[in-house]
Length: 121
Image (cartoon, rainbow, N blue to C red; front, side):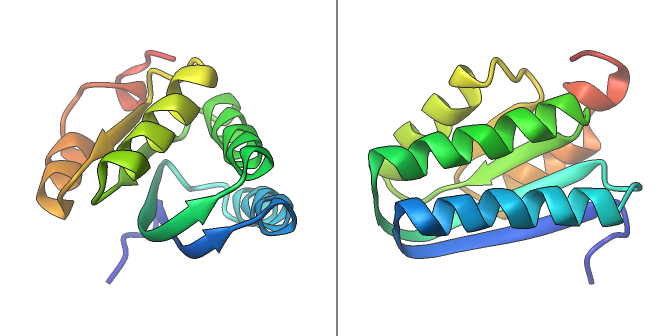
């Protein structure tokens, strides 16, 4: 069961421009309707391909999360996914975002005092 302060977003397949725009809109809607959200897990292990504009769309999502002071964990399984998530977090200048390869790493990071919940960001 997902804790009430957490939202999980799963992205799989080929991420195109229109899908990224839709994801951004859904992220805004989810954050607007869940004011208690403090943690977001973005699982991109199923992502097989993405366009440049899709990457930009993910960056827009990350900037929205940064502005809302929401800590974000990207779950990846390939070097390409890792590069994408790292680029998105870096481009958003978000020190409350991290890239991980296991759920255990994410749970430990969410439970730690490192990052946004302690007041940084």
